[in-house]
Length: 114
Length: 115
Image (cartoon, rainbow over all chains, first blue to last red; front, side, top):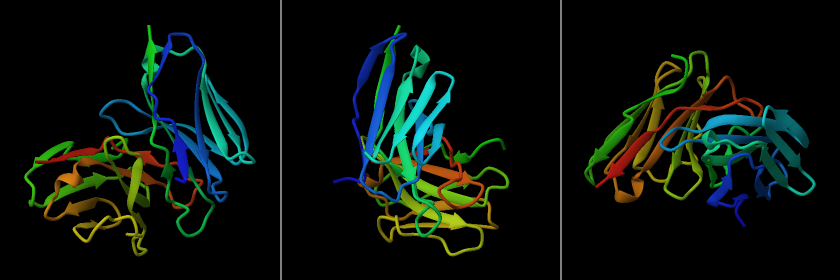
């Protein structure tokens, strides 16, 4: 079992739809959870950052972490064509050996159709 | 500069040649990372530098890969005797310090094609 599982998609939705992106993980040491957005031929851009369990909201984006289920989600409300990109989940542990290493999912490719 | 800067942005090289990829991290960031992103794969950790500490090279896939960081700033990733399977995007990132709580910022990558 890979440490982080993410459905690669592709996921295609109409403009204005609510998008749900998810990752599951197996390493209970992960404490920090991130979502990166990567446009074609660009580097990953940090979108959301969450520590431990709970929700975090930033504009149209909401990140959720459920550590008991080892499951994280990113919701995009009122999706726009400019949201079309690959979304990567990433996670890391607390201070200590290897804590700086981010473990990534493979990314979900999202297309928002006007 | 404002962000992590990488060069070259694109490189096509012949199999067996050596390549050097350069990374200039965000000013003031002491931690520097190299990741590799292959087609259809997630980002793969390669190497990590933090200040004057010995780098963590545990992610380097073979001894053909090496990296150095001079003066605690600019880093160079070198791939010797390139193979076709080395074709990938090589991403450099930096953060203020080590530890899972620090935000890691990525450059736009060096797109390497080995023919």
